[in-house]
Image (cartoon, rainbow over all chains, first blue to last red; front, side):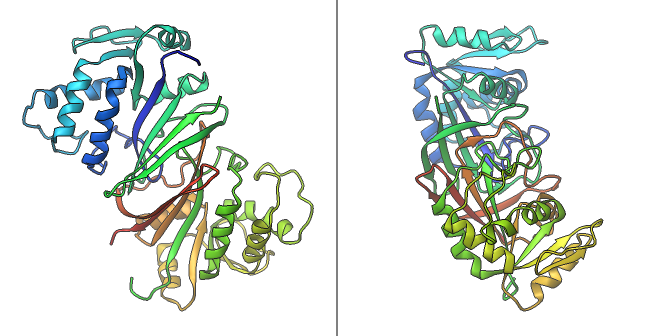
Length: 202
Length: 202
C-alpha cells in the first residue's frame, strides 16, 4: 500500500473468540492497566477512528464521561472503574476524528464526529489515500468484515482475555474467503491477557 | 476435582475465533509439525476421546487412512499432507477409546468406539470418577459447550492460527454464563501459530 494511511483494528476478545456478548456487553473484559497503557501509547499514531453506528453509540455513552472525570454511573457496557490509563484514552478519543458509517442516524453532536453515510469500500480507499495519520477501528464488526473483504485493513490487534464468554458476537463474519495473516507479536500480561498482533499478507 | 480424571479440549482456531468453517472444513489450518509433535507428545496422558457425532464422523473418514499410511485422497476437511507427527497421531487415535455422544447413530465399526447415547452431564461425571487416564475432546462444539456449562472441562487448549476465516463456527455457544480462566501457557511457533492453554478457575 506504499505511503497510504494504515488502518488497524483493536479489540478485546474472549478465549472462545467473541468480541462482545450478544447484547453488546463488554463488562467481561479482564481489567488490565498494562494493556490500557500500551493502548494509549500507540494512539498518537492514529488520528482517526472509523466506527459503525452501534459501537459509536456505545462509545458515545461512555467515554465522554470518563474524559470529564465524572463519577462512573453503573454501566452495563463496561467494568465500573476508572484509571489514569482509561482517562488518557478517553481524552484521546474525545479529540480524535470520529468517522461514522450509518444509514439512519443524521446528528452527531459528540466532538469531532462526522457522518460518512453508508459503508462503501471506495470511501475508505479515498480516506487511505488522503494525507493524515493512521486510522483505528474499535469493535464495529460489520465495518471490519466489509473492509477485510476488500483487503483494506493492514493490521489486526486482539487482546485475548482469559474468559470464556459462552456465547457472543464474532468480530468478523460473512466474509467469503480466508485471509492469511503474519503474526507480528504475541505478548503475555500478568493478568492472563495475551495480545496478538497480525499484519495482512499482501 | 481431586483425583478425578481430567478432561481437556484441543482445537485449532482462527485468529477471528472460529474452530471450523461453516461446512466443517479444517483445510485452512496452517500446517505445523512442531504443534503436531507436541500434540502427539501429550497424548499418552489421554487414553479416551469424547466425541460429538459430527466430529467423530469427520475423524472416522480421515485418521484411519493416515494410520494405514494410505496415499491421501484429496479430502476437503484437511490439508493434503502426511508427516511423521500426523502418522503418530493417527495411530494414537486408532488405539484410543472413542466415546461418542449421538441420539441417531447406532453402529460404530471404527476400532475401540463406543456409543454413549444422548449427551448428559451425569454420564461424563461418572466417567471422571472412574479410574483411567485423562480424556480429550477435539472439536465437538456441542459437547464442549454443554460440559462447560457444567464445569466439567479442566483445561482448554487453543492453537490460534494466523488466518482469518471470515465466517465459521464458534466452538462454544449457547452457554449462559461467563467463565474465568487461568492462562497456563502462551507459546509462539515459527509458523505464526500461538498455543494458548487455560485452566478452569475453580
